[in-house]
Amino acid sequence: MQRLLIDTDPGVDDALALLMAYAHPETKVEALTVTAGNVGIEHTLRNALNLVELVGADTPVFAGARDPLVRPAEDAAFVHGNDGFGDIGLPSPTRAAEPEHAALAMVRLAQRYPGELTFVMLGPLTNLALALAIDPDLPKRVPRLVVMGGAVNGRGNVSRATSEFNVHFDPEAAAVVFEAWPQFELVDWEATLAHGIPFAELAGWLGADTDRARFYDAISRKTRDWMRRIRDLAHWHAADGLAMAVVLDPDAAELWETRAARIELDGGLTRGMTVVDWAERMGWRPQCRILMRYRLDRFADLIRAALR
Ligand code: BDR
Ligand code: CA
Image 1 (tube, helix red, strand yellow):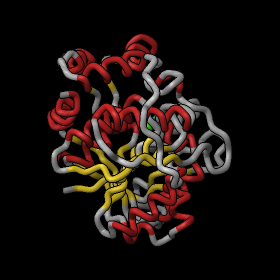
Image 2 (cartoon, protein in one colour):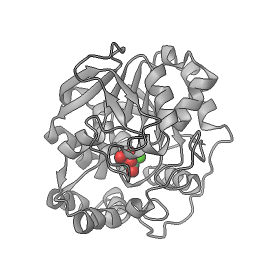
Image 3 (tube, rainbow, N blue to C red):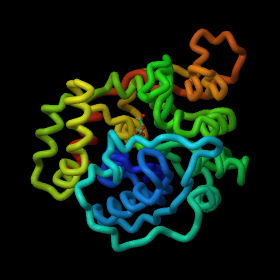
């Protein structure tokens, strides 16, 4: 049984990743820690609680960072909807968040399950940077960290051309994590682009006669339209879903590259860029296992199972 702590800013692709985790028989979601990111924390928290209710789980949900560590950042409401779940008018959740802060919950749960938890980071890294400030020994107790973030060749997805959203939202937090964590797995935006799902295929799965498929069809409609019409894309790019696939079925990863990676904080044009030492010239510690290729059929299997 794999125990997960999932840090998330739901978010349409976060929702898919969460459904994938809840559908997986060998996995237990021990906690959801929530951050601002795609939209404000009042929405991401509400969305996380709604999703836990939908799947009928009793996972504790912890509210975390309201803002990035240093500078304010723009959200991604134009992709995910103003409420982060496609503005479909979901009812308010009946359950509430736990009183403890997300960063404190990370520290406490890592102590409660030493050597057992996988931390899955699906949003900006603010909560984890705060947890590391509280407990620098955290990596000793958390054997696996999987991060969705970065653009390893500088092909980003935000207004700064070279940056990816999660890192761009809170570059200082990402820098803290990239420097402090001895070894982690990175699923970046460019891997996401390389593992798109054809819209027609996705539409078939969303037509399943289940609560989860209906829910996901509804909350993802705006984002799918945006990708298809505005971005003119033929494929659905589910960044957080791919990261979760790596967590749940790591054997389907076909190619990794291990390199040093750091975050640019000062560049006038490149703040928030993920700087990867591809040619190994910098003498930096190669701490980052970068996903290069993942079996699309196995990714599709996990998505289908999530919508059943
Ligand atoms: C990441 O940014 C967010 O908009 C998505 O939820 C994902 O975590 C992709 O760059
Ligand atoms: Ca996310």
